Image (tube, rainbow, N blue to C red; front, side):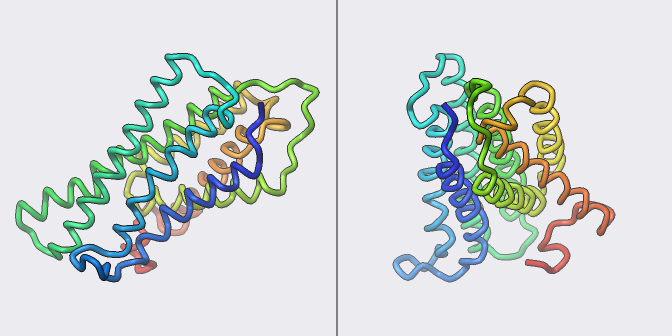
Length: 232
């Protein structure tokens, strides 16, 4: 099967919304004012996105996957969820602690801004690679992609990925992954770019992310986080 373009759009919208919106919801949560609205929304992130990854992986449940591929999916989904959950808890504690230079501040910062980000973003890249290369081949007689929805979804995904990786400080893994995925698609799944919605979606999305990374580097001479240059 070829994943429906409407499903890919739902995935891209949820991916963008659940990753980009929480940083702007810093208001205290009325029912428990030690946390923010962002923390409440972020609780939904793995509950919404991991099932959507599974639906894409299984072609809406129509494609039975091998035990090896399923185990790999579960391992990557666990890595994704571990990183996201670690970030959620540590970020909430960091917001409560405020600025400081104690050992407590240091360990919270490490879990909030370093380890959790690398685990989470490695999971994002890993699941993307798995989805692309586990995607079922399509017959050459399959109608060509209708690019409207796929292109919009890819632009939204690529922009979100760039923003999350750059602000998350994980460019050392995020940029190479974004560059290698389109190259690997060209090398091994080039023919599917015309007929396979999901392959085309990730190809365009990651290609856009690479262009954005290069533009950011050209402007700043490096990869400063958006908060470091006053954009957040």
